[in-house]
Image (cartoon, rainbow, N blue to C red):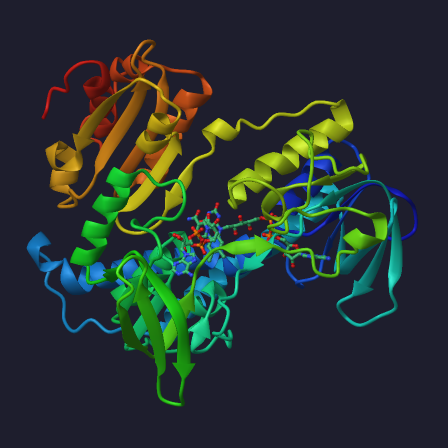
Length: 472
Ligand code: FAD
Ligand code: NAD
C-alpha cells in the first residue's frame, strides 16, 4: 500500500522525466512512488505531445505521398481518400499501447503508482488528492523529485477553446480538416502540426515574430532550407510579423497581424488558429510556497548543478526547470538525479542533446550553430554535402536537404552538426555520439559508411570540412 511507509523517493509527475526517474530509482533498490494526476502515465510526451504528433506526422505523410508523389514511382492508385477518424484511432492505439506499457514497467520494477494530484505540504510530506475523488492521503519521502512538466503558453486576447483557438492538444484531435489554419509561432510545434494539417488539405499560414522559422537554436542555413521546402509543399510564411489579436465570430476567426519592422497592418481569415508560441513550466497546485521554493521570472523552479532546490533532498528535472524542453533531456536528468541520490554523482552532457523536427524532410541538429560559433568568436571550418549528390537519396526520389558540419579550425574537433533530410532524426545519433566522444571531422570522414545509404552524405560532409568530398 503506497501510503503505508516512508518512501526513499517520491516522484511528482509521470512524464518522461518522472517515470524514468521512478523506474531508475526502483532499479537502484530504492522504495519508490510516482504520483501522476492525468490518469495515464507518460506525461505530455506520450499523451498529447511527441507520440500522438508523430503518429499523425507519419500517417499524414503517407497520405500526402500517395496523393501527390506516387505516379512518378510507377505506381498508379485509384481515388485516394482520407479517413480522419481512422487516422485518429491509429494515433490512439499507439498512445494507449505505450502509456499502458509504462504502467507495466512500473509493476515489473516495483514502483508504487499513485493516481492523484500531489501537493508538497512539508519538506518530507506530500498530500495526494486521488483522481477518483477519494479521501486525500499522505506520502512521506526521504527524497522528492519534482517532474511536473510544462503547458502551452497562452496568447493574450485569444482564448483557447481547443476547437477553433487551439494549442497542440487541440491540433492532435481535430475532427475535420480546417480549410484555413493560421499558426502563431513558427517553432517546432507550429511546423510539425502545420505540416500535418497542410498535408491533409488545409491552407496553412505560419506567422512568426522572428526573421527565421524553426524556433530557438536552429542554424540559419537550415531554417532557410526548411522554409523553402515547406513553402514548396504549400505552407505560407509571414516572418517578422506580430499577431496583434483576433476576432472570433461564429463562422470564422480574423487574425490581426502587423509587420514587426514595417508596421504594416493586415488581417488573415482562419477556421482554426493554432497558438504555438512556446511552453511554460507547470507548478500549479504543487505547493512550492509551503516550503519556500522559488521560481525564476519564467516560472522555472530554481536548482543547482545537482538538480537540488534549496531544500537539498528535493530535486527538479525536465520541462519544469532549466534547459531545452525535450523528452530525452528530461529522461537523462531523471537518471542523473537518481544517481545523485543513490551514489552522490550523476552526469548529463548538455552539449550533446540532439534536437529533431519531424517534418518531411526532417531537420536535426546537435552542438553549436554557425551563428553561435561566431558569437563565441570561434574559428571554424564548415563542410556541406547536399542529398541531391547522394545515390540513395536519388534512388528514393527524395533529395531535398543537406548535411552541414562545423569543426574547430585548429583542432578539427566537431562543434556542431546540422541536417535537413528525410531521415535526419535517425542520422543525427551518429553526430551525437561523435560529439560525446570528442571526435574530429576527419574521424568521421575516415570511417566507412555503407553504400548506398543516406549516411554517406554524413561522411562526405565531414570530408568537406577538412578536405574535399568525392561526389560533389
Ligand atoms: P511532462 O511530460 O509534461 O509530464 C509532467 C506530468 O506531471 C504530467 O503528466 C502532469 O499531469 C503531471 N503533473 C503535474 N503536476 C502534478 C501534480 N501536482 N501531481 C501529480 N502529477 C502532476 N519532445 C521531444 O523530445 N520530442 C518530440 O517529438 C516532442 N514532441 C512534442 C510534441 C508536442 C505537441 C508537445 C506539446 C511537446 C513535445 N515534446 C517533444 C516535448 C516533450 O513532450 C516534453 O519535453 C516532455 O514531455 C517533458 O517531460 P517532463 O517529464 O518534464 O514533463
Ligand atoms: P518554440 O519555442 O519552439 O517556438 C515558438 C516560436 O514562436 C518561436 O519561433 C518564437 O519566435 C515564436 N513566437 C513567440 N511569440 C510569438 C508571437 N507573439 N507572435 C509570433 N511568433 C511568436 O515553441 P513551440 O513550438 O511552442 O514548442 C514548445 C516546446 O515543445 C519547445 O521547447 C519544443 O522544443 C518542444 N517540442 C519539441 C518537439 C520535438 O522535439 N520534435 C516537438 C514539439 C514540441
